[in-house]
Length: 256
Image 1 (cartoon, helix red, strand yellow):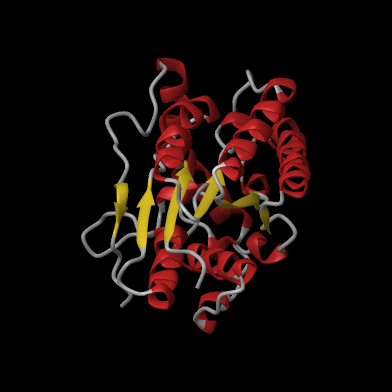
Image 2: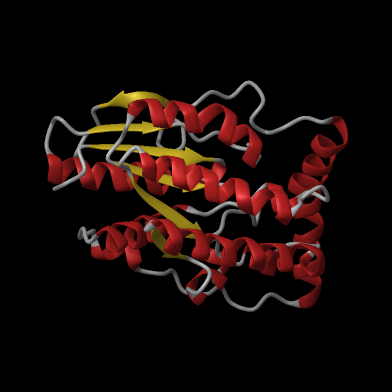
């Protein structure tokens, strides 16, 4: 086992929303990966998760990347940009060179780096015509950066299994527990580490919903999830305000 330390960097995807522990805190794919790596590496393995929901790429670069670099971990997962493509201010000409530079810095301290092509979340959300091209651009850039710097690429976008709504939470934006398990399995596979086979099991697709029931569900979703998101955008707030990293320093992780 060549990894004795693992730092996860990013936003809600990496923090673990919406895969909850019994106490209500979030687990997510990164915790699952850390648990599996710890089982291989033994008690000296260290894990930190710096990800905070709602964080935009500039905040991640300013707050989390320096902390990750200071830890000099053997392995880093870096997933950023998902929140940025939802903003009108997203500028690929600025974003892509900065993304490239961050990965270069992480690789420069000797860390193995895992990058992600994001799954097609826009299939369930409004604004697909505007945002989907940005997601395509982001995913293409991630692949090019991974190849240029020798990073490990986990391609969620090419996995059509993520079109199954059962892999997503009720807010249609974050992964469900089953979705996080699948991501964890794909990360471990990319690392050449075995995982629990059931993590790749996919729940059956739900039965087709009658038109009226589907529209009623859309209205409930808009009231519970879309409206608060819009309000935060208008008021300059974030879901991550007053949230701190759940594992800010390298520490042991249970291999249970």
